[in-house]
Length: 120
Image (cartoon, rainbow, N blue to C red; front, top):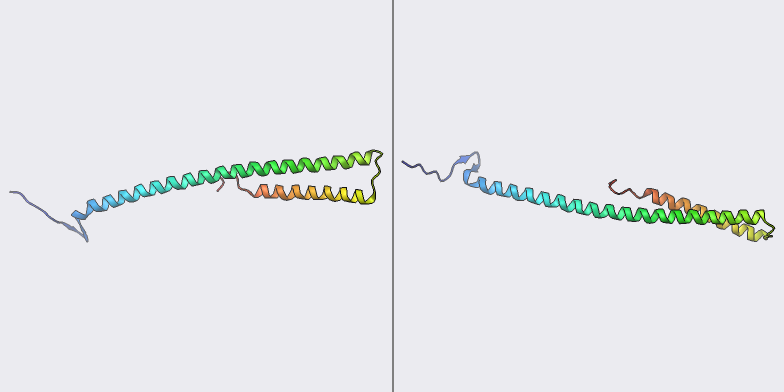
């Protein structure tokens, strides 16, 4: 004697629906893994850009610091030498030195504000 069961009800679920549900769960799992991979790839790309931006800002900060030092060295050489500068020339040189120093500080603050790669 053979017993044939076409449909068995378990709560509101039929046994015939279980394979479909399992397939949908597997499809969702695959989609989730793909999304995770896509997010990681995007994060890696953004991290690489942060590294590039950080390196660029570090170079700018170093260049500006070097420029500020050169200006200060020039001021010191002029002050130690026999060069005669007018009051206006001295004021202009002081203004340039102050601007360079302020620019170094502002750029360094900007560089410090850029997150390190992987920090997000």
